Image 1: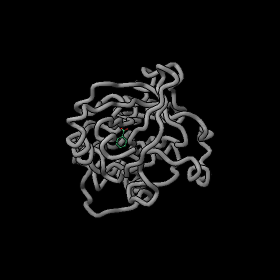
Image 2 (image 1 turned 180 degrees about the horizontal axis):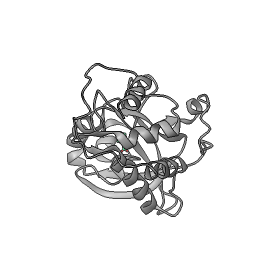
Image 3 (image 1 turned 120 degrees about the horizontal axis):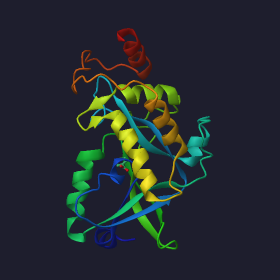
Length: 227
Ligand code: BEZ
């Protein structure tokens, strides 16, 4: 596809917060799925649902072949559909929306293009842009244990709000897309988080007591020591 066509017919696939928080200037939204990826809460969020001192956890897509090398036993076979929503952006606003998304979402994500399969009409296939947390980006954390992810999500908060709310909102939004759009990884994490006491009502930023950058394991130990 040449650059002129891309500009005239720009579709963006959302598999995270874009499902319930659409981009500006879209004129069509289609529920559907992509294949060849596995959705996981393996991306650190320092700028939306956490802070540099206490990063939250948000979703990314892991390419299936790479995911198979990671020994993740959680739920998925990796061969299924990743459900979300595709947005068609008004042609005159494509550059503005790309700039907006770069500001809103780009922390650690790279751009890829993939085929989107619309739920209705079933035969419709669209080339979509999608943001992926590539394994070599510093925010990509690799295979994490679901209980560690759930505990972190339950504790984190950032400029966009509580990490817990992001997870539960994602679970709800997925249910609205289709009867087939559930995701075992997401519903398992949501079940774990719902069984925990929500974090105390400390305002955003109050966890930033220790400004030096530390590893996830150290971060976890610090929470445990402090609780
Ligand atoms: C999303 O689908 O909401 C999304 C995921 C990663 C980066 C940007 C957007």
